[in-house]
Length: 458
Image 1 (cartoon, one colour):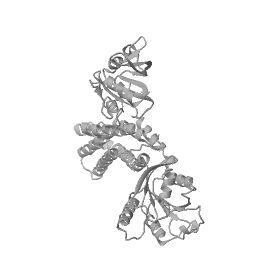
Image 2 (cartoon, helix red, strand yellow):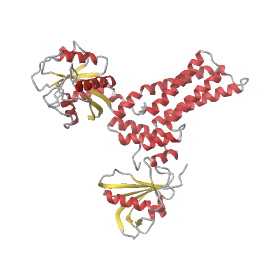
Image 3 (cartoon, one colour):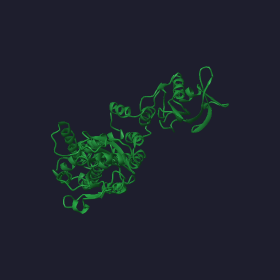
């Protein structure tokens, strides 16, 4: 579908900078731009697509507002598959708004959040998974997240989903043809091939399901909880990896009463770090609440960092915490190695099989070893953005799970020798659910909800 109206918005962040970009898209984009532009001996209407032009923005009195560069991209070879004009002006917030107001006076409507990308989707340039990848790319906080978003933006998810849907549809077509004309088309000869196709699709969806955790970690970061008894240096550790004094650090035990959450870049890694209250026996009501939250954070974490004060003797509280994280991925940091060390790292192995790293929140010693160990634990260096696809949002995950369940129903029906006409019901449900991922089977309300999350001008 093509829209009749023309939209415009500021496509760059609303901060002062060297250059800002205003984007116009729609049937009247070129004419609207021409009415506010003064180019040398020409108009945009006379220019070919994908050309760059120098000129000025002028107001109703022909007064020059700014010196600009103009990019022209004609339909269908543009981001929205409509005529698109982009005006690069100086980056002042005031001049940018003045030019936008001038554009809107030309019969152009203010774009809604995400409407340029929404038009790209509705006009068939990208599918819904690619549209979501645009926002993921904008919001990416690590190299892994950026690479995953780019892979999805290039169509890795679309290609795999379309392939699965085509296989399902081919099988449905054969089954229905066999049911309609059993004298000439035999299901008996097709059954082995159908079973093979079904198992291939199930294995594919199972792999995509299993990759969801990696996709979430890539996008949102590794949910990392910092635990330890009071005054072992948890807040100092958080401040060290953040590079700023985010948490209050004192010599008084129990300073942290609540959880603190921050996104942390550790080399190429993104960690969503939760600093918790010191875990120990206490009668303080407020401190008890903080400790309960700390224990809840442990259960929801992808990775636990247990800090132990290496300059003091090992305490029963330390040993109890090692037991609490025995079944979870994690590491033990013997903190304060800049002070005389009283705990032999080898002695820790009597209570846990977790890796022990000698560390100093004061100097940062041991930080690189920690980074390498986390990478190793989550296989991040081995992630391939060419061979694997990583769905990273709940909407896509739910569609995959629904499709997988439907195909498993078909497999069960085959084992129970249920009639072939029942196969097609579950097969088509799987087909429809996969269509939700790429936008082939979604309603308007869901589309609107997805694109409302986008920033203005995208």
